[in-house]
Length: 331
Image (cartoon, rainbow, N blue to C red):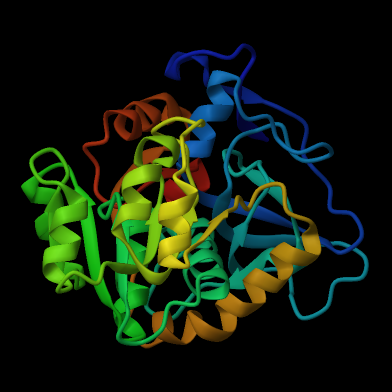
């Protein structure tokens, strides 16, 4: 098969479409013939040499994919060869075939194409686990999403609105804010021109945000705590704004606030399976009913993954950038 390899860390040109050995499923695993994968910020960090895959997992980048089951390993029940699926991965999505633990498979939702289903697993599992399973967003509360036009952001808006929450977003252009509004965002903040602390406070009569989903990390830490409502919850899922910040414990105590920080990739298989099961129970009915949809900016041939990385690094996209394999392009 072919896969995107990284012979040496570096810029987008470090991604090489090369012939590699076919993987084989082991106990509790299936082999998926990949139709499409999706680009995530973690893939860029891996390409740069800053985010190695967990031991024993695929060396190729790619944390989610869609495709068809080509082979069933021992001990797998409930799936059959030919089933159309999407999958949460620890790596290997930038390839024509990938081995997936059966607990990380999801059926392709009704009304979503097999290709576009590649945009779902990582973002839905990230949003559901952080905003709902950990931060427990409830109807009537306010969620602040940083990077509202990203793949994570566009899904967070839709899921929060689906449960009856109010949504504030930050983004850097009017075009991105307009798209967030189309998805249901109530409070639109241009972070280049406005102070999100003041804007959220103004829009909530001084109360603040009950839950904040943050991809920035250190750069926003202090202002996020300022923005929290009493009993607010800050969920940190990224480090685009740095890794070390200063926290005013008195301010957090005054808010009776909580801070969580998580990643999906290195979690044990049992934890990932539990998240995937929760997503299938709570989110898949919304997808099947058309209440929630993946937002896709563009599709790029997988062999041109370098171009896709450039698009994501330039941050002009809205939603997900997909990588389509030759078999996906021919479908």
